[in-house]
Image 1 (cartoon, rainbow, N blue to C red):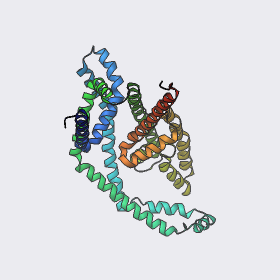
Image 2 (cartoon, helix red, strand yellow; image 1 turned 180 degrees about the vertical axis):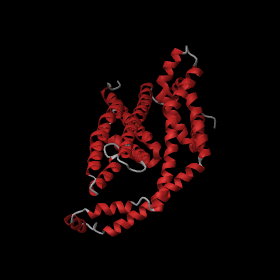
Image 3 (cartoon, helix red, strand yellow; image 1 turned 90 degrees about the vertical axis):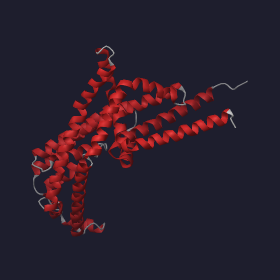
Image 4 (cartoon, rainbow, N blue to C red; image 1 turned 120 degrees about the vertical axis):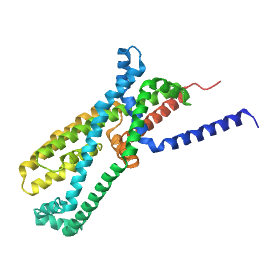
Length: 357
């Protein structure tokens, strides 16, 4: 009954149970823990430089790095989120009041469609313009209601947000201070060969750094350019549209165009050719170049993943995990590729090894 095999099996079972239980306990704060780990990985190089300048005082260096992270990343994002919630509430009120009618905008575009194009749409069963306008009106009404509901929910969940935010900062401080020691413990605890462990953990940290720096830089640039352009062209809710372009820019190649493209078509349809051509120029040659130049340099180069893998893993991650998925998806994809690469290398080494006598 007390054989070593039974004892080891019981211990591994206990280890699995308590690990799952601990993950279950942390599940309500999954986002806070994930972003605490991600920001710690991102700001660790800065912490190490400050640690050298502060002569090894870890607490002071971690606190200084934490304050830098708040000034550079966290506080601006919180301020933008607050302004965005306010603008969303105002915009949803105007939609419900009828001051903004997407159906009328769509009707203006339909009115300038030539008859041959309408006949072509009829052949594909898309010629029922009145039905499309009705569906668009209903979708806009439902969308404004959802937006208003989420805006109220954000206010009601303020306490939960504050708790998660505080937990993330608390975790970030200790991960910065004790990250090297924790990394060594993880490397030593994983039941893998040492070279494999180093390779996988290095890939994990590299992908997180590249994904956050690259995607956030691209999203911020595209959202800022798009929002400023919309504001200069006199469009209402430029902050909201800029934020939507920033969010959709997480989808490579086509993301931001889903916002500025229909607006450019509307401008051309109503005869505002100057605004339409300006928006198309900015969208193609400015916003598009940001995506085509910055993303491969900041994301693809460091992750060493093909663009189509980055695209599919990003979309799949967002579909499964929400906004956190734009980090989780590429990380899973990178670890999948790294693990299979190690497996293939190990199999090749085994084949080359001489047979046992």
